[in-house]
Image (cartoon, rainbow, N blue to C red; front, side):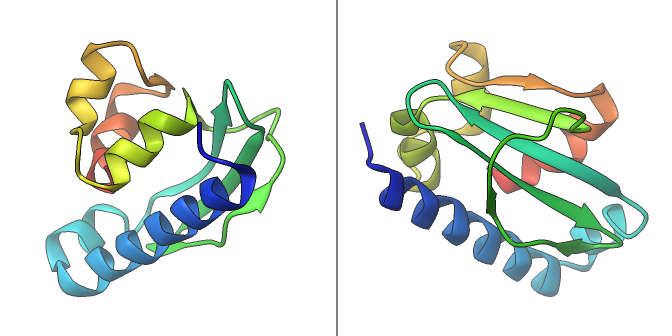
Length: 115
C-alpha cells in the first residue's frame, strides 16, 4: 500500500500527464472542450481526493470526497500506482474489478484517456 504522500504525488503526476496530453493532442483537447465534470477518486485503503475538468482545463487535486461528483472512481492505492507506472492498463484494471467507475458511458469514454 502506498502512503498518503505517495498517493497524492501519484495523483498530481496524473494531472500533469493529462494536462500534457491536452496540450499535445488536439483530438483529446477537442473532446474535452465542452466537458465539465467534477471527479472524485475514492481509495478503499487511503482517503479520497477530487478534481474537476472544465472547458478542457484539468483542475488541481484536492483532498476529500465530493458527495455529488459527476464521476466517481473507486480503487486502491496499489492499483492506481500500477496504472500510473504503466504496469497495468485501465481496461485491464476495470475488467479485473480493481477499478470501479460510476459515470455515464460517454463520460467514461472521455476520461479513459487519463489512464
